[in-house]
Image (cartoon, rainbow, N blue to C red; front, side):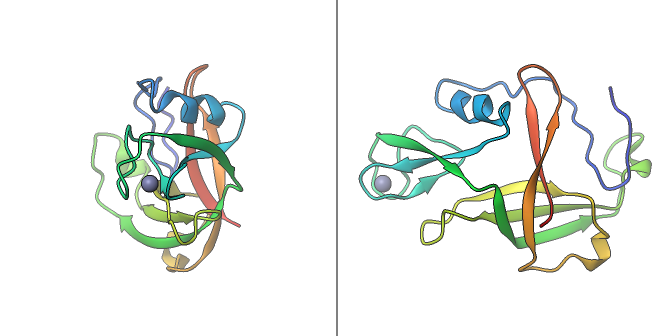
Length: 146
Ligand SMILES: [Zn+2]
């Protein structure tokens, strides 16, 4: 299944291996929806989902749909092929994306930034989610310029 594309990190697994806490997130990705858990007590977004809120220890959450856009909070460009065959993949960008809809209680995700010149990526750039369906149970999220 690994077809190597420059700038796109290959997906090695065909399932997210989710548990009861994280499965709703992966179910939503199958529908092209980026979801987050939001603490019902303090409104902190907890992503990836956890059994308890890291801010107030509450164990009750609501699922909220995020717009699927965000801002590059940080990133690095990987130039060394980390695995056999990845010489066709590097350079690629690994970013930390601060998700719109979570400001003030920021939820950030780590993701591959694709469909752009990695040399031109800057902190603060606006991005939007880009889905890659890997299998019937696993859809990977990446981000691309908005
Ligand atoms: Zn909380």
